[in-house]
Length: 115
Length: 111
Image 1 (tube, rainbow over the protein chains, first blue to last red):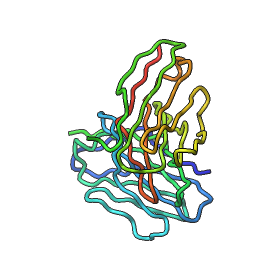
Image 2 (cartoon, rainbow over the protein chains, first blue to last red):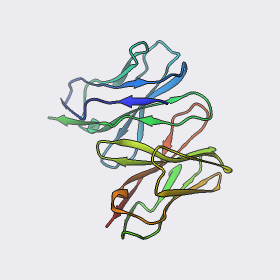
Image 3 (cartoon, rainbow over the protein chains, first blue to last red):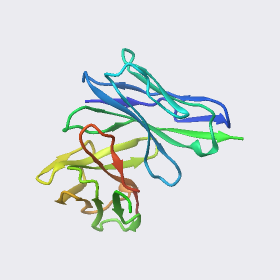
């Protein structure tokens, strides 16, 4: 079974600054995927970034990047140049590879962006 | 049109009533999932289905049932709703090694 832990229920960042959201996970699988999802007030679940565990290179999507530490089972999300539209709930999630897999979520981090 | 559609988007129901939440998808994915979101608990898996003939319980299936009527349709039922089933419910689909695709969510309130 996989578990995902987000230890920061709430975070705050000033506009244009950088913030890092933490996530740790536990799995017995050798190959798996990790994800960050954003949930704005509209409640839609939006994929922010994904990381394949077999890739050593950290994934990057524009202002969003991850710090993937496989040995430490850590998967943090860095948001650079924060914008007001980044304010949302952020969920870290994991799944193993293969067809018979499920997505396991952390408890979420609510990000506030202030002027 | 959305790839994954949930109906209704919001629902208020009374304790003891039976209610069905519906999900349909146009992505052609075999795998479908129902999650429940509660504040401070994240999203927890209720039921999932890997194809039309396959139904599996998730971590919190008590009090819920599902029906996979077709590849594109996966319904969640609360046979006798209770107030602690008040939550935000999400349907999702997944295929291969892609990420999950979510519906817009159903806000259910049981009074």
